Image (cartoon, rainbow, N blue to C red; front, side):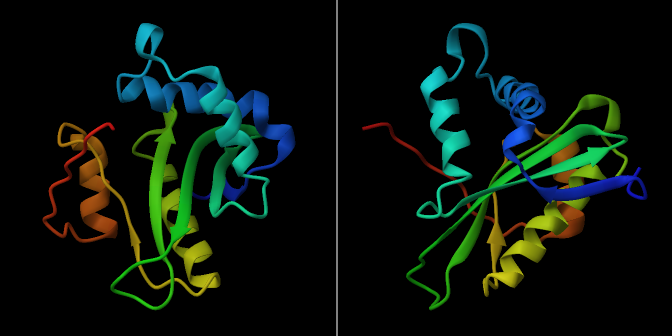
Length: 153
């Protein structure tokens, strides 16, 4: 698959094909049906990709004219670096192409975008139950051992 997959920046014309990928990503993390993201969150997320004042970016993986994966990432300041750092926030591939190199190609695409922007570190988090994803992540990055806490305010 990696020979036939092309990773590229998202385009306005991709909205109809991106939406099911975005919905699939959210459903994977339990945000579907009554717990789905509000439509205005999706709309704002989409607009941020095209706002020059927003440090939020999107790449898609395309194969045979079909979008088969997405990744969203953002650059932000850090107290431990002079240059910005990159948070890979979302990564999703359609189930029928998993294990064929699409996720790896998307991660490499983020690495390349970060490097082009002068960023030296890319990091992300995943749920502990995402064993398939973690098999890939252990091959393309190192687990730093951090545990994430969160609190809604």
